[in-house]
Length: 115
Length: 116
Image (cartoon, rainbow over all chains, first blue to last red; front, side):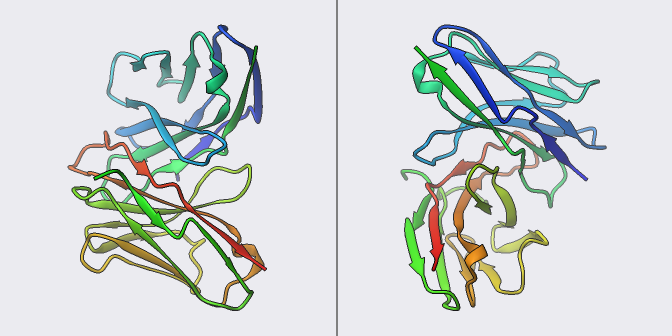
């Protein structure tokens, strides 16, 4: 069965610093996708970044990058130059390639950015 | 199309009543998901549709819960005989699945259910 583990309930960082949010996953599939979503206090889920299991390069989207280590089954999110607006819950999620599967989420990490 | 739309945004109901939520996905999206999220937790998968077919249901989806997507467009989630434990945010998401895992799911703003 698939499982996503986020071991950091909360992280604190100062503005302009970089922060890494951890995510490990468990799957026996060879083909899968990994996602990170941001959920501000307003409640909407905002897609940040995607990594496919066969992608050789780590995904990047602006200040977000995904540190993908396939052998370790980890997909950590790195936020460079944190901003106050980055304060939110962050969720790691996974989908299998086969039809008949859904997006499964971890329990999330609360990021607090201070000035 | 401005995204995934959920109605109502908030619902307060008495224990034992039935409630129904609606989700309008992004029009060209063939997959539609329902999730439940309680405070401080990640979204828990309930069920999803590909077009009008319900392809997967979580064991969290008790027999009091039913979901439909009759024409492969909007979907409804009904909870019968609500219990206080049903209080949560119910999230709907949609995506365009074309055989690849690179299918970003877009979420609605959710329906917050409070059972009193």
